[in-house]
Figure (tube, rainbow, N blue to C red):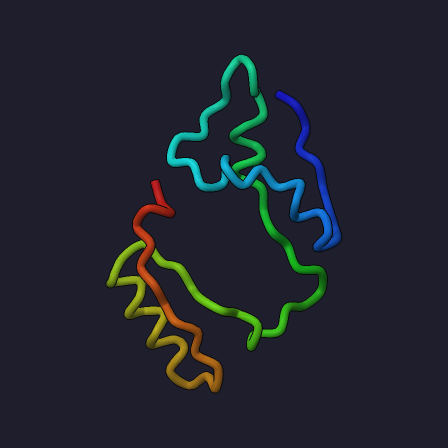
Length: 89
């Protein structure tokens, strides 16, 4: 297995393997043995991230959507909570 690379600038978004990010099947192959590591990489915000910049919250089903919407009830900023079953496996 190869090691994943780390980036810290928005200019590096072009380095993301976007076709792989959109793939439903992303297992490692002989010709590309690092697919799972790249696909499961985290996006981390250093120290803080403004809550008002959150554009959407993706969830697996309506039950979780209702839980999240309930948790957001007292918040001034309420990003849409959208069911994305295809994001989960």
